[in-house]
Image (cartoon, rainbow, N blue to C red; front, side, top):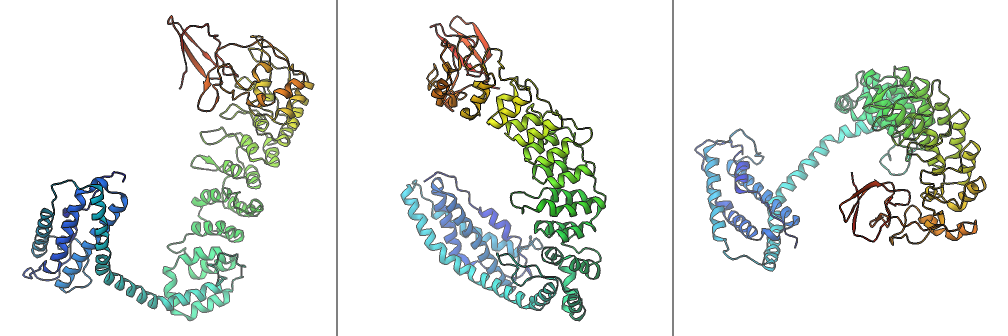
Length: 585
């Protein structure tokens, strides 16, 4: 068994609960524990036996003993209720100091402690012995639980039946009323239900003729929220003018709007938006523009637009934000471009500065994949096309990275410019992963002859995320120097091997290793071997690319630097002892 310390409900806790029993008799009344003595002795015995076995207990035993404690507390309540003559006796604080109750509890505690002392076992029981005790306890607990709780459950069931019978006329009246408002009798079915028009005349007639219904409605605010799911604007207008001129407790206009929006009853949501409190407008708009595109129908965006326009007519500002997140951001990330365009038309800031959760709207639009939305934002007056996100990418560079050539073309069309290098020093061509994207960038001035500071071409950078057979021929034909040597005299083919010099696969060049024959077929050949030390990542099976390192030589000298695209240091081993580590943040 997994060892676990067992925590039981203490006798002190039991006494604190039972000491709060309400007693309706005089203080001269004598309360005896004789009726529960045998069970109290058994209670103390089981707790002592379990205490000796607590090192073997699991959560299951904890739960079962807690159930036993609850049953025993209920037995004490029943015994006191019987002696006092109040079957509905409940625990409360009104007679906590009653001397007869205290005497009863003192006697009960004495019985339990005596049983515990008799059950003390000076030996430490084995796991097998504790398992045997546990099985015996379960055999005792089941009938004990039935004996104590059967009358409780019977009383509860009787009360529930009585409550159901008492509520039947009210439930019938409400059912007829809701049916008149359009509720389908099978509305609880999991299959789609056809929406029925409301019959306001019938609902009005029922309300006038049935006093039970009139008495029930003031406390049935959930009828309004349910009606937002199944009824129509006419039914809602009737409810909020003739039944509840002021929204009832339990369902505000805001709550009803949420129900209508969730069930995609856009006409109801639009009508409710026209009655919304001004202070709730942003909350309603947030819920609307955040409609989950993964679960909403494909036409959600367009059908929700009239609802948003109604909120604008009620005073919603296009540049509003909720919890410091703009509504425009929420509309974009939830892939609701029509709603995003409406927000822009009503004044949303297309140049909003990014915060810890948002990117600039144009870059968010790129990630959404909506070319029309990108075009609207990019063409907005005063738009800053080259604003960066937290990763240092512009909208154009993000579209290149995400391989969205249609959006890249749209951004070029409105004047976005291709930077020679991104913030990290790499050219945008380094993120290309399709021939279509490569040709598009080359047509707009991208340089296929780019080399980094150590003389490496684009090839090792492309190896991180490109389908090489598709991209490399396009770049080579455009002038990429396939056999260019870097400052160490090596060509790309020197690194496109199954194993690096350290015996670990290169993550950056794994694709290149698989395409070695392909590169040779294009005319690649080997240069000088690069013998620099390589930092291998044992966990990933690759190398540590662009990571700070420290090498300590045998004579105490330190060499600090940053690994390159091949995971290599600037230092070449000379046969002496050394210690090399990646410097973690």
